[in-house]
Structure formats: structure tokens, C-alpha cells
Amino acid sequence: MGRTRAALLPAAAWRQVSKRGLRPEDVALVLRRLGEAFPHLEFSRWQVTEADAGSEVAVDRVGVTSRTLRCHIPVAGLGVSVRVGSPAGPVPRRDAVILRDLAVEARQVLETPSRVRGTLTDFGSLAFSRAVARLLKPPLGWEMVSDTLRALQVLASQTYEDRRIPFGVILTSHAAAGHGLSFESKRLKALTDGFSTALLLDREGGLAGIIALDSARETARSGLGRPWWFGPLADSAARAGGVGIALTRGGDLLIAHRREMVASQRSGRWMLWRHTELLDRIRQSWHTRGRGDQLGQVIAAVYRVALELVTRRSGGLLVVASTRDGGRKLVASRGDLLGSTRRIAEERRLDASLAGQLVHRADRRIMADLASVDGALIVDRSGRLIAFGAMVKSSSSSVTQGARSRAAVAASRRGLAMKVSSDGGISVYRHGRLVLSL
Image 1 (tube, one colour):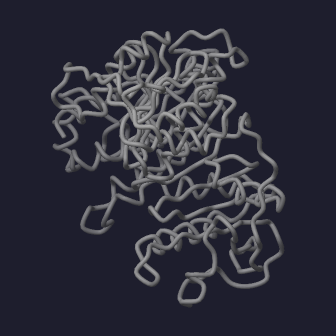
Image 2 (tube, one colour; image 1 turned 180 degrees about the vertical axis):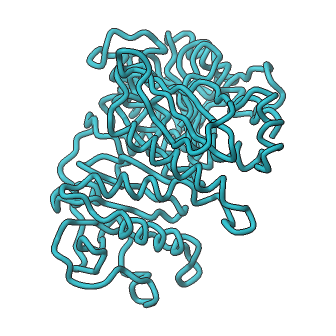
């Protein structure tokens, strides 16, 4: 926890926090979760100053442009503030509004005595309920959205016939037909899976029916930011003019609007998915010419494969090598290379069918299955497959990192590496350093 605190606030600030009766571990968790909600933005280190009595939460523009915002949270007589910037241009107003809602929620949570407030695992739920409510025009009632999300979170901790429960709902602006959704009925708990069917809710959260989900035609080169299996719910929600929410068997909540995954709660962390901005940040680490060039397409395809692994809760390592020879040198054993004569006959036949595949033109479900095999999936900058299920030579730079992280650091010195953790997080490395964490 010491290193985490130091990264968030200067060392002297933690003494001020403790003197005001705040629990440093609570402050650290809230500030970390607030920053994690906006992976496409850049947060400076938080600062602590004395706060004037009666001061309010503020999110203000810094300078004449809107590329940087200052977020100020008064709590227990202290002012906790941070600068938030956008590498891609002005910070969108929608993000500034969500940031302010999260800051207000942070203040409320930290000023509530721990014996009263209970756990901090729900931090962000109120702010994201408001954000989801604003996705539709006219906006939904955020209290209804909050109640629906809370019901799904409770469902995530339950089982049906000894199995975790997946679920799907679509929030709409339809006229109210009943009261809010309740899962008291055992039948309702097993009624949908969020993949083939979903419950349709009216604007008051009442049950308006059940629909079969159908995905629009999507090609392998589709640029939509979402896992493939999430397509039927995302597309059906878009046709209904609503917002789709899926509860996965792993207990994650995924939220879809206009056919894309726009937000999620995974392992207690709420996060916005601004796919265009995230991809721009990843591409900038390689200084590609733009989104339309071949390398840009390869990086986008690998990113979408990572999205597949995220919702499967399947760890993996995806590498785009600067050169084909460099990618081959990453592999610890020559037998792990595609087409190696050291592989058994069945593997060589599979390799032959994959030899001409380009990651940005292949079906990403196939690439996701290849990436799920223990080891790394490696392609060159043209998208050609070099290896899958390969053991990669690791870096010895930090004994505190896990084996997959050390392999990602080493691989990123010869290209770009995306490490997907089994808990659903994505870490992007380039030149041996962390570029982005999702």
C-alpha cells in the first residue's frame, strides 16, 4: 500500500490525511478508482491543500483551451485536487460531467464514517448510473438505473442450480408499464442469458417483455469496440433505441450504447470505454501515420482480440513485433514458432491453415482462441502470425512483477505488447514501459 499511496499523493500529504481522521487506505482506493475510470485521459499526481469552509467540488477548465481540467474535492477541511488532460484534444464535456459526478461521490463516501458506509466496492455506481441515464433522450431517471444495476450486482453473487447467473436487460424510454424489476422470483433469475435473450424494461424499470437478441451483420474487419459475443445485445439495444446491460458469468457488468461497449464494472472498478481515444493513445506510442495505415489496422485488431479475452476472464499476451525476425527472436523455444518442424503432425497441419492469416482480416474469435492458449500470440507489423501459445523470453528488470508482466516488458522492446490479466485488466507496453492500463 505504501507504494500505491506514494504514487497518488506526495508523502507529506498522507500525514495531513491521517490528521484529519481519514483512513489513508480509503483515500487511496477512492482516488485510484477515480483515475481508473478514465483510462483515455492522463491524471497528474493528486495534491492536498487546506480547503476553505463551505468550498464545493469543482471541475474547471485550465487555461484558454479545454485540453486540461482541474478537479478539486474538498473533504474534511482539505482540498484534494488533480489535473486531468486529454492527449487527443479537448476533454469532452460528457467526460467532465462524469468526472464531477465521481468527485461528488468521492467526497460523500470519504466524509461518511466507515462504520456507517460499509464497503467501498460500490464506489462509482451512482456516478455511472447518472451517466447511463443520460445516454437516452429524454434521459432516464438515474435512480431507476441505479436500482437496476444494484439488482444485477446482487444477482452476480448468487447461483442458479450451482452455476453463476448471466443476465441481460435493455433499458428503454418506453412508457411505464409496471414497477421496477425484482429478482425475488426464481423464474426470473434463469430467464435470460444476455446472449440469446434479454428482458426489455420501460423507463421506470418495469418489465415490458422478453426479446430474442439478434446481431447485425459484422465482418471480421469491423471497427466496433465490443466483444463479439456482446454483439447481439448491443445491436438489439440500438434497434430498440435503448441501453443494453449484460451481467457475465464472471460477475462483470458491460454496458452498450449505439452498438458499442461504453462502460463496464469489472472486479469492482467502473470504467469508461472510449475506444477511439484509447486506440489513438496506443498508436501514438508507436508513432503510426494514422488509423488507416496497415500497422494502425493491426494494432486495432489486436486491441479487439484483447477485448475478447477481457470478458472471458482469460489471461493472455498479445505482441505486435516491429520485424518478423525480431518477433521470432522473442520466442524461447523454436518449437513454438508457427510451422516449426519440431511440432507434431496435427499442429503442423493447423499451422499450414493459419500461415496466410492476417490478424486484421481474420475472424477475431479464432484469434482470441489462439490467444487463450497458454503463452503469447505474436504477429509482425503486417499482421502475419508468427507464433501462438509461445513462451516468451522474460525481462529480469523487476522481481515484483509476475511472469506474464516480465514477458510483456521484454516483448515490448521489440514492438508492442498487450498483457491481459485473468482478472480482466489490459496493460499496454512499448519500449519496456507501461503505456496504458485498462
